[in-house]
Image 1 (cartoon, one colour):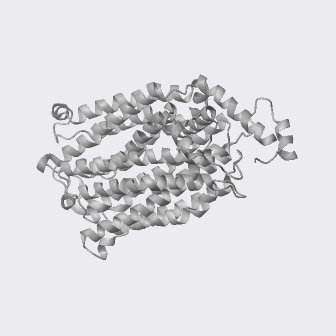
Image 2 (tube, rainbow, N blue to C red):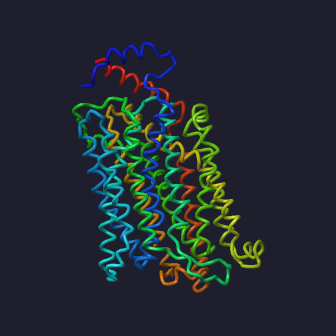
Image 3 (cartoon, rainbow, N blue to C red):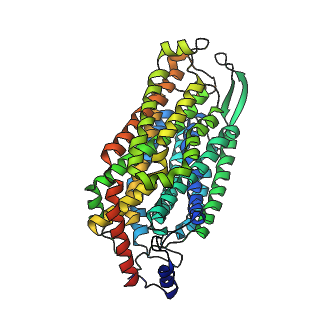
Length: 504
């Protein structure tokens, strides 16, 4: 049974302007939520961007074995994610809320797990079977802790406020947090974790660098500690305003059965699979910068190109969403990312074009590659900034259609779809590296002409994004049905239901 409004809360509601939502939030609280996602990305970006490099180049594990590991560990997620979803959903709220407590209880083991994934275990043993087993254990531990944080953290956004404007603000600031967390890793890690060999590549004239296991471990420790600080900061600066049931009764059969029949959820889950998969696949650009362009610092430039459009457009996002709608913005702008990615895939793998534009080296120009990344970033920005608000809309839609509300159950399935996307990206990328004949023994030899390895890496890093960005555009333009107009009665229904529960 929901608690009745206190006299102070009732007075506050009565004094609120007629057009102001009673659960309105401001920038201060949105910033607190933002820090939580920055903490998420300190861990996730470093793991997703460099664990593959660590396994292949530091531990010497073959790409195909690393790819199999990512597939097998995700099989455990088929069990782990629903278990976490059930556990979070059925646990009654505490004094500090239903979802906030996880920010302070899971943060330490999650931060620790990031460092453990990058421990230079090869200093203790050179047994490849044992090293691979350690990778399985540490990565599974990380995955369990990340899920234990991400499901309640994602669910938290839907109970901080039920104000549509507030949710757009939360989603926008969460995306800023993603940019901060991901940007810190992407901008700083390449400067720290690679060590110069003193050898100059004859094709490009660039100094060759290799991954340093000790530095990778230290950087993992720093990211883990930073994430703990940011999670706790987020815990102390957010509040749950939308009440949760004191004794939750969740019908998971009906909930999950309803999701399988829900076009909005299925579309969002598929889009989440592609979005998360592409974010994960971007990490293979580390191999491209290292072995094609022979310039690991291009990781920094690439990060700037990806995030600069977001920085420019983020100030206008709330007004644009309010005027046009989330579905409309995503569907009409993501086509820019799709077209650019397809053109890049065509041109970057066309020998005649490359020899025409850069005849001296026969290498696709880095400046043109970066320009394409920036244009892709512009077209993809609206999808990136609104994706979490879209999930909140789907939660409301499910309650509107079925009368059932279970944030954690829906987030568990959505989280799994994103993890599945990451798995497909990691496994397919590593299998394709095996096809490209990538060998950790030649990981530091610069532009590899033998077997066309470097050119195959360029093919891998351009053809997959072309397919994925096209898929995201098709889903958001033609698949996702919740237009601005269709969401209005849903918002009204959910708000009315909340008010009835609060006054009961």
